[in-house]
Image (cartoon, rainbow, N blue to C red; front, side, top):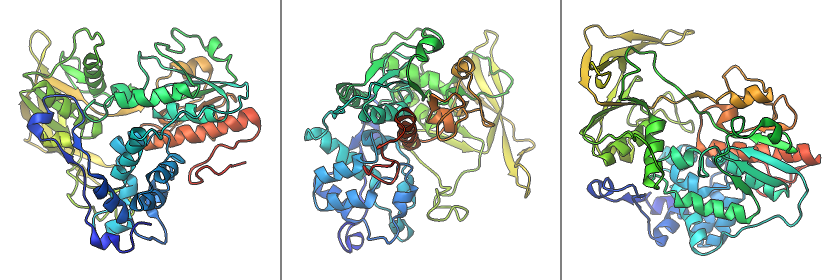
Length: 484
């Protein structure tokens, strides 16, 4: 726990941001780190809960009260050890996780919850600054070889855990840099890519081999892949959802991930032909999630003429909805830093048509206001509001509608079964082909980064058990304790 009664003595304090006018002029991270004494105060707010709901709400099973207590006592190296016992990459989750732990914090019932995510970020950043993060190669090698396909958080977590078990691990990435969606799907202003490079350097020093520009099943055969003793598929859910809407083929209707990936690649000097820019355009982002928010922030940095956001669902309440009481994940309005930079947000809007000129170029969107009819025992029904059609000027429409599942190239060539949700089917992370395992979004569908890391860790444990007949790799909630 933190300081006895600390939650009554100290208020929650979050990082502040560089002013909008300054931060939208570049693509750098813009949070202003709190002083160390303020971070200590935030750790001191942790209560002596009989049941730490934060711990159980975290997909990784992070030992949150324990590292909060160490921060309160200014035992930062001990806090780092506790944090890293369950989380391979706190530098990612501390920036990008929506923090389900905070939504279930007991203190949140009566006050602002403990600033867990920011504490986590500060612990790991201090660890790097002080030189406490050192490569830890295994003392003994098993001689077993494992191929990990995909270098997102699930793949990297699986790779590190399997390497710690002593296996020879090779990570294959089809793009030209490591990181998966961390690299190309998350804008630089949320995660500067040097943060990824810093971690990859540690993983390489631990003995993991990385191979980029390798698209298994395309320029690398599955026969070569099957030469490994085991395979872990962590390619993510990359099939992008579209709209069955008239005019969808108009020039200027673009998938959000294409837009975001091009921006990151160009920022780092990679050649991007015909880059899609929002400069001087009326931009409409369709989809109200994190990817939509990232498109808003990127469009503002491009210098868009206007940025509008459509969401087909109702506007959530500002406070926690009664339908999602503590400690559940709340139905609640989320206003991101990108929204604050400039965005006209609209709810209960459905796109009826993408309007183009005689050159096939997008010039507008036709929409209609909608409502949802809820009938017990039946699927919600979308009802259009009569007479509510509207034409919006639009030069660039960005589709941030999520993903429908993983691509099927690998599953087809490897003979893998698919489940009812179009994901790779697995039992205890093992597919119907015994030496092939899968984890992350490829197995569970589009989800959170913290779930991806958890999946990678748990899959690694099952692979190790398959290869060796036993495993000493930890499972969630048990830190570094062996699990036979």
